[in-house]
Image (cartoon, rainbow, N blue to C red; front, side, top):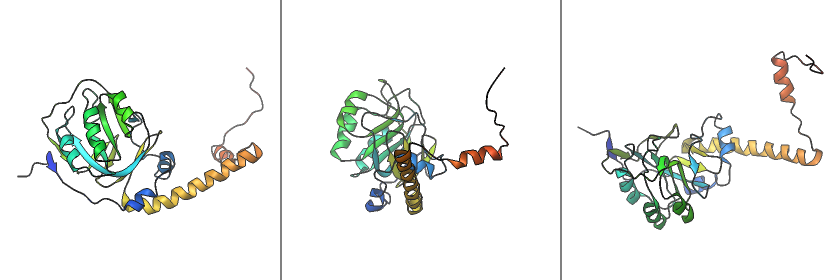
Length: 230
């Protein structure tokens, strides 16, 4: 009988590197706008030190407060991978610290995102590796398992599959299905083009014309009065 709570897939299909690179420099906010404005991971997951990362997701599911499966995943990680750890949002125990980050630096991974806690915050920030976490605590992890590696996980309330494209900056984190990447790139290109036009208009005239605001208010039958008096 298979053990669905303790499964490891040693590898997964990574998106083409050129496809991933096309997302570099695109703000997470713009991507989220083009993904229904509800694709970003929980805002509680924040950068520790340097912000900004991009790469394919290597997913890890750990038992809350336990990092056994993360230890195994570290050896599977390849250059450029973003290790995405589903720790159930628990912040009572750290999942990793400085020593593990230094090991991963030697493997040239692209970063780590943990829906949970870490420790050695200042030392990790000093390494320059982009790391995102929900919390920080000195309490260390257990190493008992179970867990999974390279299976679908949940991080910050969003489903993440192995090989999803991870984009993060100072605003937050989004996860992109590679099968939807081309369509998303087209949408975000048009959005950013329109935003540039708006910014240029502000620079030239000092005003921002937004006719849609009045259209919305009119549709709501909003009442307008010139002055408020008791």
